[in-house]
Length: 421
Ligand code: UD1
Image (cartoon, rainbow, N blue to C red; front, side, top):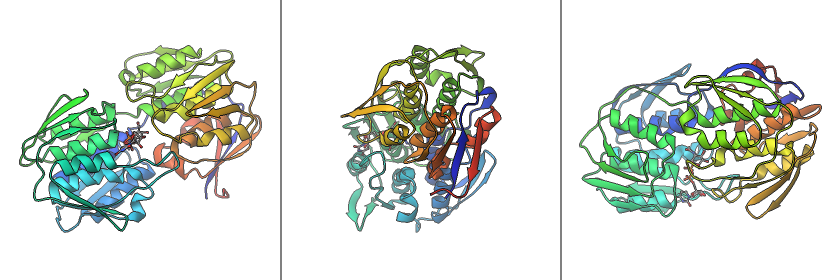
């Protein structure tokens, strides 16, 4: 297995570009199930998760070619193909995103239940409940969600909690349902807005995008469309954390600034300097030791759970004590034990981590447990004394395009080796 070997102690300097958003690309690509024809989707990151979804679509008779950051897709509509097998779903939970569009277009879906993952149980009960309300018959058989309908009907959907992919699945189902669907307590994450904009470009009728109540008026059919995906706000913020921890000075190009207000505020609180060069570019620099700051993850526009681990790496070497509280996932602290192996002083108490900043971390062998945890370990490795070996970086490759290359372009010393465990 591949690992990253990071030689700590180099200050990051220079310019780096943010890639297209993974979490926006996945639902947008899944939405091509909704209509046969050809699509060109731009600004898609070349990532393992994207390739997994394209492999899944090929089983559904949707051909694709990923060429740099462009995906060309050809949906040859085949109502006989409606299965997302365990082999693929187990490597990427977001495969659940094919459930809504398959039901809406092919009237049938057999999608492996995602099951738990390193950051918690992560059920999909809200997806299932909503699609049943829209007229689907859904059973769980042999570990699969087996769903069928004559046609989906509009309904009033009340989510018990805010779910990003749940909202996306229902949106994709509702655009071809008969009548009006209202989604209450909808997710307002920017990636949901990007999906809705793509669906609107395909001819969907959607109102209230970006608010907690979305109304969809079902149409009889859609048309294929071309689209350019938004940039990745989590990657942008991760790069900011990497620059900041090294006391660096980095210009980050392609930052979706309007979606990062909370993150900018939190980083400023720790003493990171953020300069808005223009509406796309942000200069990040830090001088001296960062200050401890408490953070609590929340649904958008709160502080993203997908940035909790990276922020914690900063807090590990900040001056003072910070409390990092995770409210979205019940078990998203797998990075804590690994950061402690590098000398971090962290105590876990219920859903919080109390981080007592230390003067220095020391390089160690650490194991990536999930996507964002792996980014956190790489960030910590940038300032640790000696070498940090981050194992199981297939997690990192699921969600960060050229992460090690981008950091090396800024002066980091990271090698990719094959002899990981
Ligand atoms: C998406 C993002 C992920 C991010 C998360 C929260 C994608 C591909 N992934 O994941 O990067 O960390 O949003 O911002 O966009 N829940 C239920 N029942 C459900 C659905 C969710 O109990 O049916 C719970 C989950 O276990 C979790 C919370 O709701 O505790 C939020 O999950 P959700 O927003 O659905 O996360 P994902 O959409 O899977």
